[in-house]
Image (cartoon, rainbow, N blue to C red; front, side, top):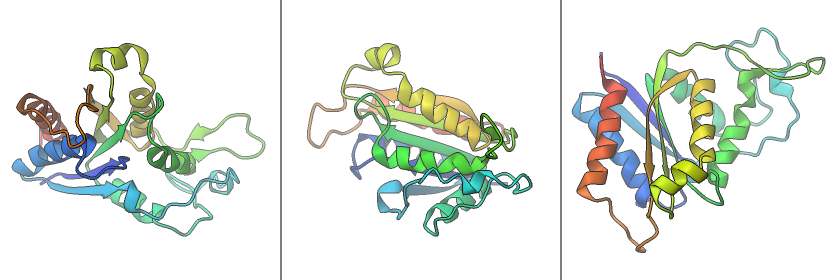
Length: 203
């Protein structure tokens, strides 16, 4: 059966480096007969989490609780849940993911059970039946980011686990602020394409 892969893209710039990386990963999936969808968080009406914790109170809510907001988040989560694999992608801004990605991540508290009597939140389910690729880009060299700007990837890897996925590859790309309309090199395209192949490996 063909795999379905959903990409959650936190970039502000459509057609930019992060977009190009995600497209190469998705192209590899399509070349293997998979179905793909790109969700640009920039286009989605998502409210900010208010920390009300309504979604964390029901013990028997299933894998996630219900949020007070009636917005695009419910549809996005349903598409993620229906997918076999996910991609989480964000440029690095001020040593972390973009505000678009952070807003999305904060809304994922619905996957936790955290009654007011509880000291810490607990994940509702620890099932890992999906695969994930995480992607980030940064203006500094990639080896510097690997050593000194680890937070974006650590954060997105943890988010992947929360969404029930096992991270099979991480793509870090540095030196992406050299031109206003920078394009991926052939080598960079191949690197992203390989990540896509890992998403569908064994299917």
